[in-house]
Image (tube, rainbow, N blue to C red):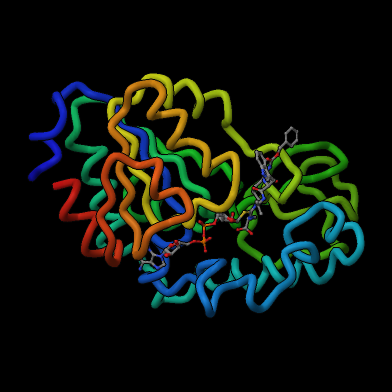
Length: 237
Ligand code: BV8
């Protein structure tokens, strides 16, 4: 049943995506059997403490993943493209919130997009606190493009224990949502994993589109399980 049958044309839609939507584009997830946390200790590479302990390890972790974005085989897939088409064709508001740090939603054409965990293609200077584009390998020897000082550059990524970006805008959108779609996320990491309960309490219809039931599946009104490139285009058409 097309989305337009479920909703009024002016209804608001909030979409949350996680690593699963990029899996079929060749980007690793975190908690699948062959995922990133099977190869790296989260505390070493995705916390401020880990960065202070060994910045070179963390830079290498993100440099490898940033380089992966430039692999010609890594392209937006049918799920990314279907969400960009929905944003273009839907008359109501559509807000796409992603936990992902890749740029596949942008490359698919999505515009109203918030990266709540930051972006691989940006760097942050701890001295002058500016965010700047980053397409190259970062290291402890880098100088900031803004203040010129050395040794303060880090990936512009939200690590565990750090406040995610755009939370106020996300909370406002969840309070106003008529439909909340959660795509390709295990529902393990907060505050993102709590969005479904917030949307539901505001009266939204909540749907999970995921390869398999997530940790939060019981919070959803509806769940469709299968590969994102199949279930997402079928649901949003
Ligand atoms: C914070 C860095 C507070 C970027 C990441 C309760 C409330 C608030 C906080 C907490 C809380 N309980 C615990 C916490 C602390 C913590 C947390 O949640 N810990 C977890 C381990 C329990 N949260 C935080 O620290 C957050 N910060 O709360 O700050 C605060 C308040 C005031 C002041 C200061 C601070 C910060 C969280 C962000 C951490 N950064 N990563 C990076 O390196 O990428 S999180 C990491 O997990 C990634 O960002 C990733 O996006 C995120 C979520 O993972 P998923 O995207 O869901 O990926 P996963 O592999 O888990 O699942 C993939 C899914 O896809 C699977 O279900 C699979 O079945 C499916 N799939 C696979 N293939 C396909 C598919 N689906 C469809 N098609 C396919 N083909």
